[in-house]
Image (tube, rainbow, N blue to C red; front, side, top):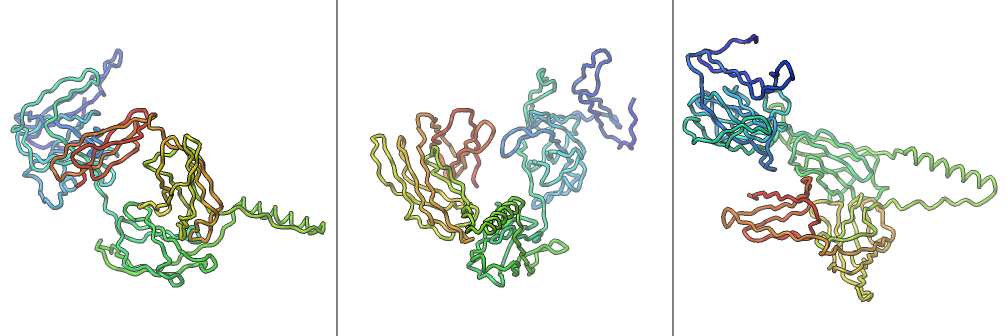
Length: 467
C-alpha cells in the first residue's frame, strides 16, 4: 500500500509512475511503464500529447528532459520576458525517454503552454546556464491536434510514438553581475583582468608608468570576460608594482550598470623555482671551486628563453599552412629575412616567396604561408634575430624541413546546399566520428561547397543557419 502525505486537489487526475520499480517475486523481472491513475473527481482526464526533445545545436535527443504543461488561462504571459517556468508550477509533467520521445497522458481538453526542461540536478527546478530549456510559441490543445501513431518498442521496452510537437532545446545564459572580480600579474610583462560577466564595457584604462600605446589588450575568451594585458616595455623600465586606473560599467546593488573607476595595483616579483635554485647553487659551487684552484671561471651561456612552438618537420596541409605559436606577442618581425627553399621531384632547388601572417583571433599565433606544391620538399629558415617579443627576447636560428599532403591519400567531399531563400547563409562544419571540428566553411549560400584533405574514417556534418 502507498500513503499520500499531501492533500489532494478536488476534481484532479493523478498518475503514479512506477517506471521499472515493480518486479515479480520469483525472478525479479521488472514491469516496465507501470502507471496507476486515479481521480478525485467524477472522471479521469484522458487526452494525450506526443513530442520530441532534441539539442538545438547537435540535433541529438536530450536525456532526462521533462515536459511541463501549464493551462493557458492560469499563467501570465509576457512575450518580451517569459518567466512562466520560474513563477508557476506545472499542472502536468511528462518525461522523455532516452530517444527523446515523450507521451504526456491524462491531459484536459484545454489549451496549454508547454515547456521542455532538462533537469540535470534532479531537483525539478529549471536552472539557467545549467539545464537546457525549450519552448513553443502559442498554446496547444490536445483535443485539436491531429491523430498520431503509438506503439510499444520491444527492444527498448517502453511505449513510443510519432511526435506531434518538436522542442529544440538550448542552454540559456545565466545572469552574472558585472564586476572586476580579480586582477593579477603572472609575468613581468603580462597582467590579467577577470570580470564577473561577459562583454565588459571598459571606457578608460591608464597606467602611471606605461604609455597607452605600449599596452596590448588581448581578450582570452569569446565574451572578453578574461583579458590579458601585455606591456611592450623593456624589463628594466617596468616597476615591481604597476599602478593604474580602470573605468568600466559595474552592476550596483540593484543590478543596474553604473560607470565606476577603480584603482589597479599589479605586483610582480621573480620567484625562483626549485630547479632554478639548484642550478644557481651548482654554478656557485663551480665558481668557488675554480677560484680556490686559481683558475678562471666563466659562467656557461644560458639557453635562449625566447619560446615558440613550431614543428621542425612533418607534412603540411596546403590549405592550413604552417602554424607557429609564441609565449609573448611579437613586437618586431623581419618577414623579408625568412627563406623557403623548394626541392622538386627533379632535385632542382629554388627559393620561393614566404610570409608570416598573424592569426585574426589569437594574438600569439602566426601562420607561415607559401604556395605549397604536392610532391616537393621544403626547407624553412628563420634567421637569428628575425623576431622580437614584448619582453625584448629574440629568436635563435630556426630551421625546419617539410613535405606536403598527398591528395591521393585523402578524400574530397562535396556538399550541395539548398538554402531557405536567396539570402540564407550557413556555416557548414565537418566533424570526425567523435564530434571534433576538423574543417569549417562560412558564408555558405545555395550551391556546392567542397572539403579537401579529409582523412579516412567516420565523418559528420553540422549545419548552422547564420542569421
